[in-house]
Image (cartoon, rainbow, N blue to C red; front, side, top):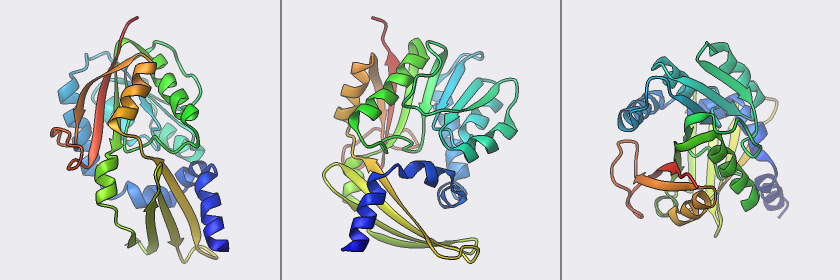
Length: 257
């Protein structure tokens, strides 16, 4: 019972600040799929066809891998994230057209400044209340110009429910990750136990991601003046299918009022 209470507490606490700052987070998620991420960015830009001088905002940019690739294509890119260590690393790559700031997406940022805004790799849905999620969408909507484009890359709730793998073990460069997943009506949970010889004892994190559907995002976007234009179901831009698609990639436009 005590262990269950501890897990429940960790899952509802502000877990993401410590976890996103951890080197284990980046090792677990990002070292294995650089090629896939690069291919997705290339395909997205080919689809969107931004003008050469476009200004872009990468929301929850982490260490800036997507931002860097976009800037290398010639765009003016700004990345924001609340993980201090990640932004510190990202700033090492800053140039005249690549900028990084420590910032919480729930709080307003630059207004009517960007032509495009992006939120990649399910870097959303981990706040405690609906108001916090609405505030994040508001920040993004306010940051782009009228007729600007926002792209959100999120998990497909229905696919994730049907394909949930409850336990998994991974070993990466001598570090062991023991993963347990579960869900309830509103959230997906993932407990990650890290065992590393460099640690005195294992570290435990619990992720919590909201089960937002296409309908939920349609409502949240509409309230902030965003209208969904296209929906894709994977990183190859195949059509979205409610049960078969692993991702839900939304492309929305800021509608002038």
